[in-house]
Every structure is written in C-alpha cells, then in structure tokens.
Image (cartoon, rainbow, N blue to C red; front, side):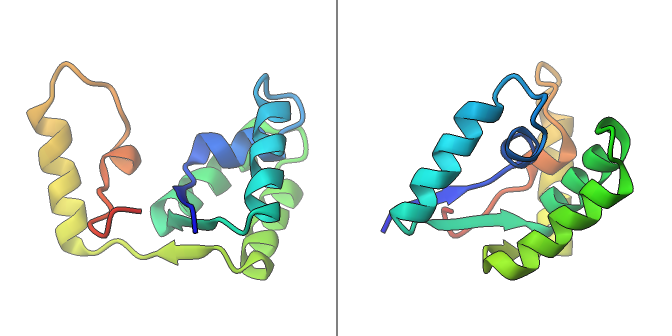
Length: 113
C-alpha cells in the first residue's frame, strides 16, 4: 500500500478552488482514494490548515470547520506531535539559517510516513 504525507499545501490546494494547484491536488487525492493510499498528517498540519482556511478563503470559518468535519469522517491518520518532536523541529529551524520552512514543516515523522 502506498503511503503519503499530506501537508498544509496539499489540503489547501484541494479545498480552495481558487488555488492554482487545485486541479492537481484534486486528481492526486482522487487517485489516493481509488488506490486506497495510507494518508497521514500531523495535528500541527491540521492546526495550520485550519488557520489558513480561516484567514485566506472567502468562506472563512465555515470552510475551516468543514475541513475539520471532513478530516474526522475521512479516517485519515493524524499523528500527534510530542514535546520531543517540537524540540527537534525548533533545533532544525535554528540549525538551518539558510532555510525558510515553517516550524510545522520541520516536524519530523519518525516512522517514515
């Protein structure tokens, strides 16, 4: 079974019809559904996606709540980050001054998802 990590960009592109990558995201998620991929994300990605939808879509709160409801119904696995995960992410962003990835993106999934 194919495994894939879903980040905020993927969720946002899928949900926001105005996103330039919406059609691509829609096709990838459709393929994942048809092929029964094992999709995983983290709780910090959920928080980040909720905030992005809340503030950047014309629908705001209703669109953000719809995202949360869909996640619950989808069965997508959500890994909870630990304090150790947070510490590692902070160390990573501190140690790579040449990078501009978010703290959320710096959280490492230790089981390889």
